[in-house]
Length: 84
Image (cartoon, rainbow, N blue to C red; front, side):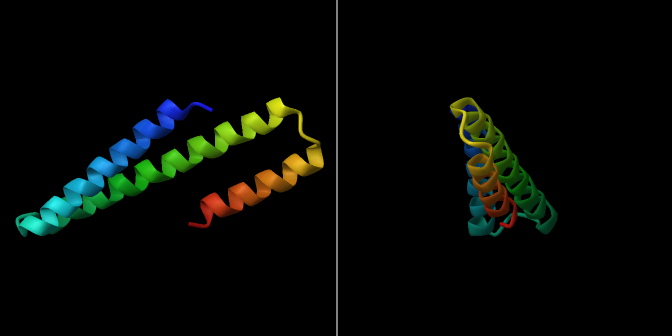
């Protein structure tokens, strides 16, 4: 799997979450900037999950799993990832 891209996205989200915590803790952050940081962190996490599902799907195809098993597994992964 292409872990580097996924880890980069997770690190970006972590940085944004730390910025949110810092703003809230200091009491100096304005509402709009904090909401923007929330949106950015959410987007980074969503993109990380999408990248992971894509890489997982490619890995399943490369393994040559039986199509029925692969379909069932991918349906579970997609349902889990996108029902967050």
